[in-house]
Length: 269
Image (cartoon, rainbow, N blue to C red; front, side):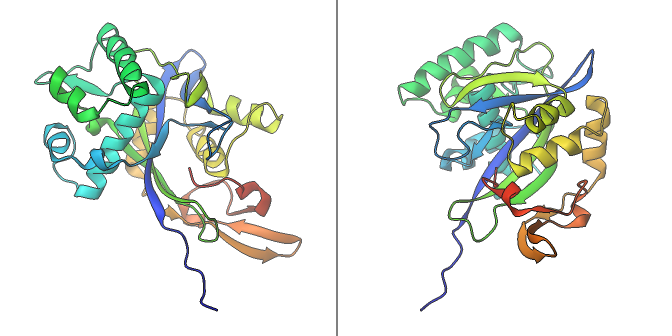
């Protein structure tokens, strides 16, 4: 019998949208609809798989921060901006030729119209960018982590996590469809609530929240992300002294290198 080949890991992009608050650094988290096939009911960062339209040459040519990256990386960054817009209403974009991001009222208006159009199946990021004369602010995205779903799982993602400062003037709000709840919170609060059983966090989400929790401000988190290399994490299952374990590279910079294998269920986002 031929050995089963691992499923293809689908390229995906996820964004840790952060802001400074009175209690310190906060990150935007969404609650995914329980009916969604992947990670239904989980608390997660906005994100999803790369769509074919994310590789559009017009989008790349008109975006900031893509001049020195290859086509694959450009599509990932465009997907990151698109997913943040779809799932949070935050639009990381500038009016063409301007330095400042979109003001709150315009971003909110575009988010509302985009969500109505998306429900009707007639929206495309390229059309929005061209019509509104926008420049995607891909230059705000800082690589933070890279996780690939283990090879033995039937549904796999090759997920790049980006860190991005939230526009001060824009308000984040979930879409009410794919995401049914949202909240800004300190990373440690999300971890504490998950430990108490009040929310569900996938393994990569939990570890990246713990990594983010080391920093007290957006500036500190961004500086660390720019300074530290991103090490790809492809979790592996090995037999330990007291049972099966999931292992990740120590050089990836997390607070652990192994955990009970049941913590890996649903990993990949």
